[in-house]
Length: 410
View 1: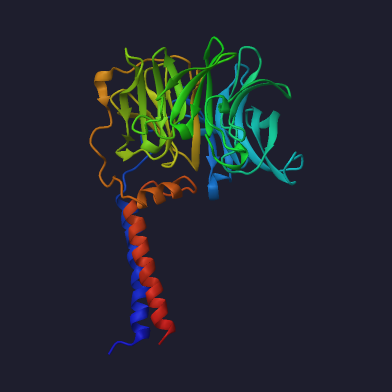
View 2: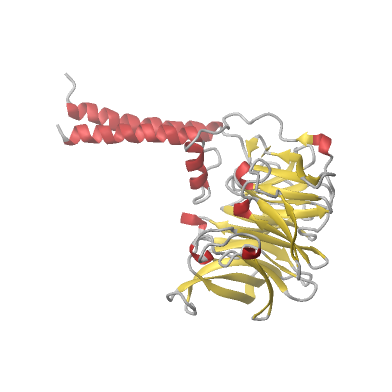
């Protein structure tokens, strides 16, 4: 007769072995990413890496790739975000870091966010920065900054949900989202709108990504909001998007992050916006939380596939022409020397869904899909981890707990 101790041991060992075997087999049969290598030095890419660790608040970095080779890297902040190469060769980057003593209304030491000017090279260094204290590390960062022709810096501020221009230490202009959206009593205490991107698109007009509203708005300096893309926030069109690129009047390219796809939206004759082109996978692997897409001058699209920890360049048909597996979670990438342009080649709406058939093993399982996304966006996980791994993990954990109980109560 099998004793409770023997039965318990079998349950514990079985649970551990089954889960371990599932992980080993999944890793062995997973498709490869980052294999479309082209180390031509002319394919230079600047990367802002949010990093890793809990909440993606560790090991942030900015680095430059020549093909797939790293030529320099600066890793001195908890997180870096948007990166831009300036005309003089310096690099402009949004960032977040802790340990500051000047904390305003918050306790010291505290977290600061803002932007840095980095001098690249074999020994890259920060030569200037603009910062301000924020309440927490989470959902309060400056995700985007760019230098305007006026010499001002255009900045997003998720702490106070606004965009602003800065010269030196002075805020010279700002647009507060409360002019359009109903604000909570204190936006610094909740992740209200999560304004994560702003681009100067000409004539004192700025394209703004209001992530939590699933909307893009065009703000004109002195006028406020003059156009809304996806007015009403239909999640079938955009769902918690990042880093839109203005391709021209009536066209915008967007990383549709929580729909796990890249979309090109075109304005219709009625004034609505519709999906003219979309892509949801590359290298046979479905996108997971993509957060940047840039239409390149050569007509290809450079995509930052954050949770899958990769960069991919695809053509209009969706074929991968270059890819790179990143060390941790990338936030944004720019192909040098042009960077993210205002205006770019449009894709033909007849191309439609360039992604092809649904990737094997993908699909949505309620609750588990939400949990997997929460894990992927909080900590680097292998790209091949799927919902069924979580389900199996729960079953195996139950086996271990039951087995441990039997052993302890013999």
